[in-house]
Image (cartoon, rainbow, N blue to C red; front, top):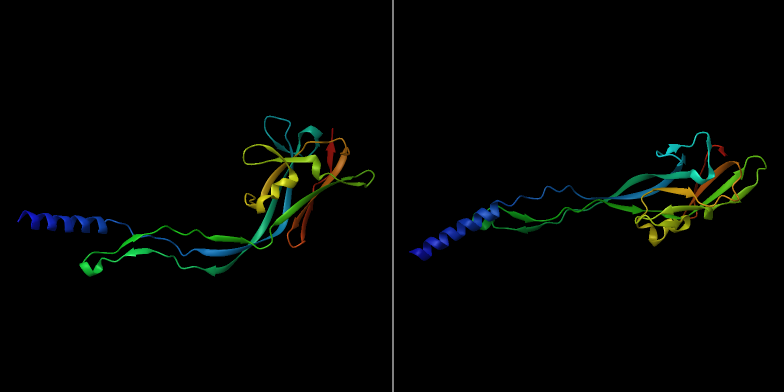
Length: 199
């Protein structure tokens, strides 16, 4: 008699465990194609305790630029959510789902290959490539050359980055900086700063 009672209790305990499982409420994951279409830049004065936008005179040792790439997203596919389903309905139990939600997938159709920074002397109209005058920082806070931002197949690049002027011996006192972002296809996105007056 005790064996039958134990078996009955065990069955209902198992049913309780099964029916207490919550079903997954996952949305169908989507796949998007991402295409960069423009670049926006903002200049900064980093000399004070609080970084301010550089709208007037700024020191060459305290000059930075934020580069933001805008992009379009185009949905290209749907994928059905896969669930591992344990079907106990034949035994009078409800279904239990063991699953995890699949995130949306973003495919970069034309990733960034490199960046070029030039400066124009507004007095002489001379244009100089100053890409190597700027530095950025990686996720560990270490200084890196601007050219290294796009290494490792852009795996850590999220469309926005900050750069700082580190070498200024060839920077004119009145200047316009032009940022050219070069994509894998060879297409370019270009934007220029307003006239920057250096102290």
